[in-house]
Image (cartoon, rainbow, N blue to C red; front, side, top):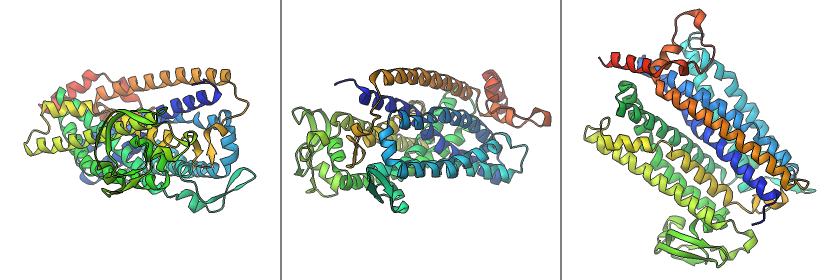
Length: 474
């Protein structure tokens, strides 16, 4: 493989997006969880919900800030590394991105300050409203970003004029054939990711005997939510797969490692795709099962990769293994939910060492699944930026040199490692302090002691939280 400006630009974009996507994968679901906690506190007046909301608001603030910092540099790459793509698609992509800023980012920015600092300054209904608006803003942001991505995956509603994509029907541009499935699949993945973080944090507290009342509430809420959302995600993924088979059959062929067009397609459990020989090595497969879940017909026909010229095929091995990582984690999630209900029926949900340890280990599972699913979606689209119409090789800036991208890539690597290492350390410290310290800090009665920053809880010693927890238990 030749290392040139195109390859390095792709690696740089992967590096930036892969780190950035971890933040919306968390904050979209977390904002919805905070809005739920705020509403329950308003309605039920149970202080547990106040403590939990105050705790997660602070974690949301740090995560949101990291998301802004890591995401704000992304648009610059379109001008520096992908100027041909920007020039040809700006009338479509630029409009959708502008809608995202106007309707989503401004909404989040307007109400985030009220959510972070306004508990003692506004009526309770206004604070709940701010939480709901922040959650709505994160969902609207997902809507517009996925509208852009879906148009690149299944483009429609435009015409090409002098080499540029010009929208002729904005509703068709926004609501492409893959958009509803992609939006549902991605948003559900985000909220499931957050639910597993909440479950894992609560499981960690329960194993340590800390914040028991708050942790029981988190486990109960997370398990109930996941009991609905994980099976729903399996159903949505199946519908999304049917849509992909219709509109991007080469991607599905790469996901399955399928080379020959055939009926009664086997379900490939493991193989090592050999793209040069156009075959799979060491394959383990279940006969005919692939046709059933791909087409919902035991005798269904699926096109193989040999139907397309080599230059039009996606990188098979990357897509093949990423798809199995995503599906494998989904099955582990489903198994943990079932295990949780078994422990609930046995009356041991909150004190089963095995289940709590498994829940804690599954804390990052959603992030891994999101990255794997994103890899399937984006690498499976190759070699196109706009599917079937604009190649990735024709999208890169023509004047870009290998030295240019090497320098910027090195800078991005260092910057993102520093940002995310510092952010993770801070978040870990905040989790150690726990929800009671967070609520005490936010709930100060002294009007001169208004919170000056959303991270004030991290200055509290974890020992204070343990002391309070011991008093509460007593």
